[in-house]
Image 1 (cartoon, one colour):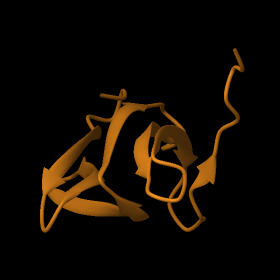
Image 2 (cartoon, rainbow, N blue to C red):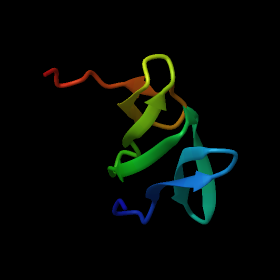
Image 3 (cartoon, helix red, strand yellow):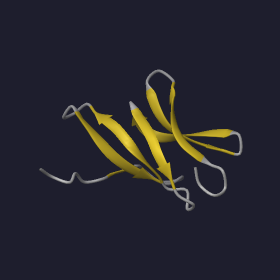
Length: 77
C-alpha cells in the first residue's frame, strides 16, 4: 500500500490478474494473466510476477498506469 492508500494485489477473474485498488476502483494491469501485484510505490508504479507460458517460468514485471508492463530481467544463475 502506498501513502495515498492504493493497494497492489490480484483478483481471480478467469485466472489470476494483477490489479491496483485506488479510491474504491479496480485498475487491471494489462496483459497480466496469471499474475500478482506485490508492491506499489507513491508514484503509482506496481511490481509483481506473472506466469510466462512461452518458457514455463515465473517472471517479474513493472508497470505504471497508461503504459505497457515491462518484463524485468532475471538475476541469472
